[in-house]
Image (tube, rainbow, N blue to C red; front, side):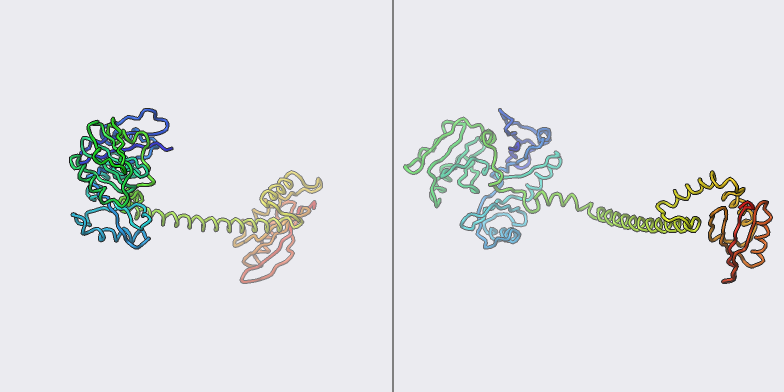
Length: 410
């Protein structure tokens, strides 16, 4: 079972001094402590924090509204109770529990100003409170029994799962008599907890009602030390505007616009990255296709091209180190010597170059036939180089030519 830290809020609503007790399976001897809310933070460590709202600040009642819709119910409750309340309903906070078999909904009513003060104090102390329940509903409840806790500050009186009162001790007899007379089902027992043995309710003892005294109790928190609080079957005041979801929403709202801008920026950046990635993939595919085409043009005998860059490097290495012993010209020498002549020809564009069996075949574009002829003469001027114009055609104001270049030993 999860540990519980139960905080009893001061009855005046303004005091900063609170009492609390920590309960759990590992805590053999729980003790009631007193101090500031900040002192509790050190003990939280995963425990469920429950605050008890003083009964003199909370009204417990019931309403019968024919709707099962939670939102409509909460909107209708203030107007259903308006005539019974002294304060303006706009200044009050309403929280509900589970409806009974008759369709009546239990309601806890408390001043919004008090809830706001508590929230400010919790936040200032860095304390996250999970639930707030009326303290009278923390009293133990037994079948066919009512429970009374008599303290110096007053008496807590619980009559049902969601019903109870906080009353002055001087008025116990009157309130008890009134409650018994109006009860649809009278209790069979009165469980009375008190520190003062002199407190007696024998006058209410009848054949139908048994008085069971539990002397020696030192207050509500000590009474809870043995059982804790059943948070599931209770009224949590942290509903509506005070729910944890709403409180998180209030913290989130100032940052919502900035977060929206950050979200838009992230989407834009992601979109740009995807587009750029797609463009790079396309460019990579185009470059690979172009490299394969150049490789095929240079080495037309190649049948399988896996990695044109690596294969081209391997072929060049073979040409650089190999070649027949009878040949005096290698591919690199022919290419190097030809390159000098190419650089001296204005407007020349090299379209392709292929080398096979000691012969270099190049396809070029030159401005005119005169330029092609002069290029042949420059190439032929290189020692040991034989040049032949295999074809020449004039297209689009330029001449496309094919030259065969080889060494004399080829």
